[in-house]
Length: 101
Image (cartoon, rainbow, N blue to C red; front, top):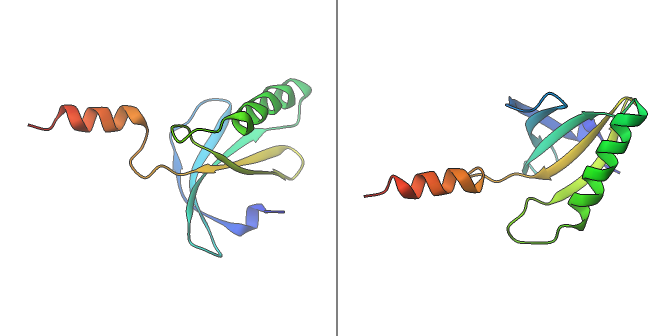
């Protein structure tokens, strides 16, 4: 099972109020991922996070970011490891193409 210690935080990314998001590197392979740390202490938080995880696990498309794994941190947070899209989201790519001559 993956652990928080298996990853090196490269930098924090802008994120929402419900979670902290980081660009991380898996130490053993140097592959980059997104780590989303969410509160997992209260029942309400757990329910929201569980729904998000179930939804992400059910998505299977080349056009969505895939959930790689999930693991707890100190029984109060949960880390979700997601694929890292080097070029950003689809909105960034559209903006780039619109700027081409």
